[in-house]
Length: 70
Image (cartoon, rainbow, N blue to C red; front, side, top):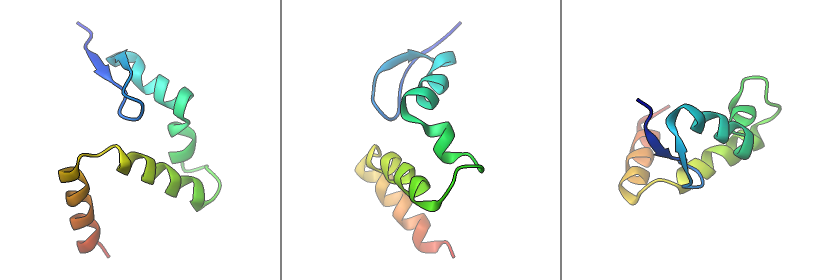
């Protein structure tokens, strides 16, 4: 049975089987994150957009992981 989920970007409610298509079409996530996307600025914008959607705890975890990467 299908589940109802929220879009991680805009918060609207969708059927789980359709939310990926919505993100790709409405927010351009598939285009921005694809390997064929041109340039770093679009990728950075997508990462920042997703980062802004995180809770404070999620942001702390990302920063901690980035601090240990490299």
